[in-house]
Each structure stands twice: as structure tokens, then as C-alpha cells.
Length: 510
Image (cartoon, rainbow, N blue to C red; front, side, top):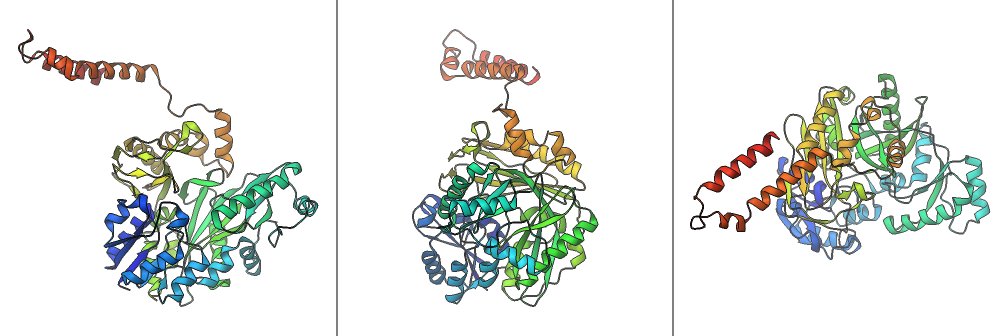
């Protein structure tokens, strides 16, 4: 394996490129029109255009990606996450082109990529599942039939897309009168996002935690589970903060959940990286939710507490190598890690996307800090894709210090030119429920609703005073003011110098 085509963009493309470098493999990038100067394009050995900015005309075009793979002489394709990462047709096209797909088999993607089929696989493996329908709801199913199914499950219910993830094609229904419209809306969103409008119903558990287990499987029958990740901090079903290990998982529960995850993976002959997601109720009973047949966004926190490079292992497994990692090491966390997903969104405007040019970018650093990003100063954040610009990770010996390091890192992070979620995370990490680990999957939506649109950045009198001083300094140091103080205008040449210094000292100590 000498060349790998990375069928993705942004920070995950950069992440895979770095793994390729360490394995002496040549990384090949692809880009849409708006990504022509993106960081992943500059980092790669070769880069090829694949079409207009809209995903359906570029990153979702299987034919163009396969064409580039052949023309570039690539041996393998890494899909990253999102776009075509869990698309069985793409994996099959890579295979049929004589290339290696760095991920699971087509059959595994097909089985576990369908939430209903995955639920049946979990049941066969003896793993409990959340009560729900075994098959998708037929497009022609009468409204009365759908209502009967929901009544049998009990409200509240979730309408969920059979394909995809990330909260798309998902609706919560608490009132039976809203069921039919929720099914229609979920179908429409799922069809647009995944090209598959199929949905099913699932009972919604009350105040559960979202716990997931990372897996690696090789082609020689070995499946290794990693310790759990806590992913309960979600906004509208979309994860925003992840951490590992979970405060809610005891050593005994960890053994039970990781064993169940491995059993599901073995039942479908799973290879490469994947993740089993569970819901954990208030009585510490867990239920299989779904499987992600790809690398997860939050994989860095697992790497930080185990020391295992998951992307390197993805490539090594695809080359046919055997997993030779000590299984016990993967279940014994070395410290604690937290990840915040930094989005180009305006948290004070209902988290609406904030596309535009990044004017300044200062990335935090120091002990225990990692920033996975595809952003640079001068980069135009496009409207066409997911607005995540980086994943900020803090690691420390324990959770308390990891949270303190994350707070420090958020304070160091500087992004100008666009709005970001940095102020939101600063607020979130100050909440007592977060610091005490008392949260669940609906916690964040509830506390955000209770804020009633209150700004995350409030201007205090002290800040207003500093802003007034800054404005005065700007006026005083403007070219017209300096010209009036220049020699020949009746003032000493150095007169403005000491005034400026005095103002600066006043600002520093005021």
C-alpha cells in the first residue's frame, strides 16, 4: 500500500494525511471548487478536483472519486467520516475497482448501516435493544397503522431514519396528534441527507445517557473493544462534547458493555474501526442503539487515554496486519480526556451557521492539549458543509484537571472574522451539572431552553470601560492625530510617544 486516496475534506482529511506520513504512505487529496486552497489540499502529495462546491456534485460523487483513485495510482481509499463513509455502494465500487477500502466489508456496512437490521443483529448476539419496530414503516402505511404501532410502544416515541446518523431524520413525538407530521418530516430530511427516506419507530427512554464503545477488528478474527466514551452532552441529538471514561460506568458495567459490543461485532464478522452505541438508563441498564461503521468524530479522546493510534491501525488492518495490542490496556484508562467540537456557528443566534473568512486564528497549546483542525487564518468557511472547524481535546490525570485544562485552552483560542461556539463551551464548562457529571441526553437542550436566549457573552461595566479606552486610543493614534502632533505643527517630535505610553499603561493597570 503505497498511495491512499482520502475521500473527504477538512480536519479528518488532515488527520488521515498525518497517519499516512507516519507510515510512509503517500496521501492523495480531492477537493471541490470552494476547497481549492484548503489545508488538506496543501498537506497532500497530490490533489485532484472533483466538482462544484455542493456535496452532491463533488464529495458524494462515487464515479469521480473512483476515477481519481485510478488516475492517481492509489492502492486504497480512506473514507473518513460523513459523506460516503458508511455507503455500501461506495465501498463496493472501491472493491470492484481493485482497490482496498479502509473500513469494514460491504456486507458489514449493509447490515449495520441499517438501524433495523443492526437491531436484529444485536438481538441475535443476545444484546438488549430499545423497544421499537423491527422493520421500516412502509411508505404507503396508513396513518392509523402508524398510530397503533406508536401506541404499542408507548409515548414518547422517536421517529428515526433507517440510514445515516447525526440526528438527521429524527423527531421526538410526545403528542399522538404530532405523529404523522413527524414521520413525514423525518422521511423528507432522511431522503435529502442520506438518499434513503426509510424511517422506523423507537421508544424514547427517559433521561438516558449515551455511551459508546470503540472497536477494532482485524481480518484474522480478532475483535478488541476499548473503554467507553460518554457522549450525552448533545444539542438536538448532535453530540457537542465527549469524554472518556464515563463517570456513570463502573468497572463491572464496563466489562458488560464492552463484551456486548464485541459480541455484536463478531456476530457480523466486523473488521477495521467501528463503534457500538448504547443508551444507559437511570438504573444502569444498557440497550443497543446502533453501530457506526466508520471512524468516529470523537476518536481522539480514546487515543489520548489508551495511547493507541486508531487511524494508523485502520490502515494497518487494511494491509492485512494482525492486531497485537494488549486487550487489558484498552480497558484501563490512563487519565481522562474531553473533546469540544468547535463550530462556525453563532450561539447567540440559535446556533445558526456562521460562514465567512477566518481573519485571525490562534490555536491553544500547552500540556495535555490537542487541536485537530482543517482551518487556517485566511480560510473561507463555506456554507456547503458541516460547520465544524476543529476538535479541541484536553487530557489530564483526572477529570477535574482535564476540565481545568479545557477551560484554559478555550481562553487561549482566538478566532476572528466568524462567530464560533467558543463562548458557549466556556459557559457550559462552568455549569455545576457538567462539573458534577449530572447530565443526560436531553440535559443540554433543557438548560438552553431555560436560558430564554440570554447571550453567552455579556458585556460587563468593566468590559465596557476597557472598550471605551480602546476606542479612545484608536482615535488618539489615528494618522490624522499623529500628523497634528508631528514636528512643524508646533509640538515636540516625541510628545505623542510619552502620551501613548501613558495611555497604554493606564489600559494595562486600569
